[in-house]
Image (cartoon, rainbow, N blue to C red):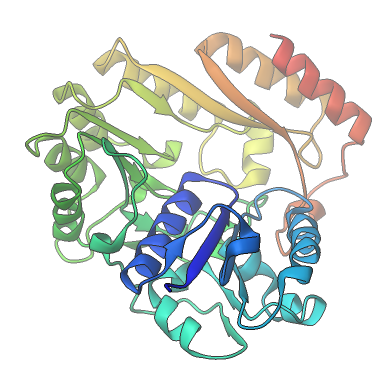
Length: 354
């Protein structure tokens, strides 16, 4: 009888794709997926650490799984909380067999072969076997083109959990898209438009054009873009290819240049609005969405008002907003006085009421 596995995934599209990669590798090794952890020989939690108390959620879930640890059943914690917590997971939950960060998804064999193990380094060889991805859709494929982030925003834990930016070779991305055979492609990266081929130096705009021109690709999306990485090459690729989505998620985080400097976002309010205008001039039918953080340390009522006026100026069809939450090891909590929870809650409600 084949061994069985269960995967529970939390968080972003990158985590979804990492779980597809883990699932594909396990199926190649004779495992069969089950939807009930009680029937699994291998239980994997693929975790997210972007919000506050994410680690508490993981430890709580591990407590629920403790009773399933019997015989040859193995439990592994993967993803960003695994990267963040490392050995602490094995100390607090000794029934866990292994801890594996995002950089080691391609090294699952080595992790499974050992006993208790911690794999949270960032190997130079970030193996990516795209033929082993277990894609849940017959029409859509997600394709990672760049991992990690070099921006070091003061509120963000991603550079710690995902490492420095590493772009995949241009030809590897093209080969994966072709091999997927899907008509809808979504290119992924923490800062997807920072892509630059490590072999040829070709940039994100060149890759967008090349993927859009692959026979059979009817729709092409990508996320998440950083405003500071938008350039003429990217805009031209979007303008010149009708199968590239006319929807762009462009997180601003705050409408206040003062807060943006504290966040180390690498642009001002004025520069962000100029980027929006450049894109709209080239692609009038474009639609934008964005992210806001409310209650960032030191945010005043005046700063918050600038977020509200930016929303009115850009006219986003949709947006996502979150109350600031401090993450381990990030400098933001020391940047300014904390905003009281009640004030942050009230500001968040006012933003959504627009």
